[in-house]
Length: 152
View (cartoon, rainbow, N blue to C red):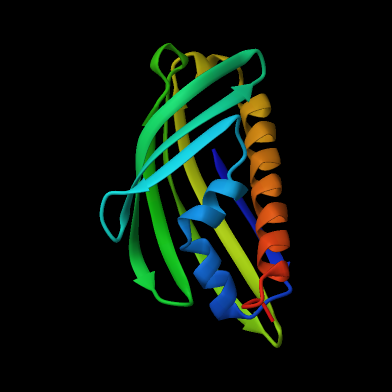
């Protein structure tokens, strides 16, 4: 599954970058019933998220690693998680920021693979859920960054 998109965030590029690297903000932005993130190193995180996809509700435990970091501009995230019987998910995302006056254009490209019971739900359902989760993440991020005193 491949997804791509872009968002214009009414905040300076440095504020958006800071938010994308703030665990507390990320936890609030990641959709799910339960989300935890903890730093393992400056570029690696342990993550747990409980999500409902169609009839399936599962707890995924995994790791996310940042690489190809160009501060204030871009990075690549790679991660994988296991949801037990529900299956697994792994993939990567490239995130790029481009200043546009007092706003920032964030673009992303996601490549993901799933297996187990998740894969049996069908790609159309999975793609729809992932798009919805991305929309919720970025809507919350925009709200958080635009309210922040650092955003302006």
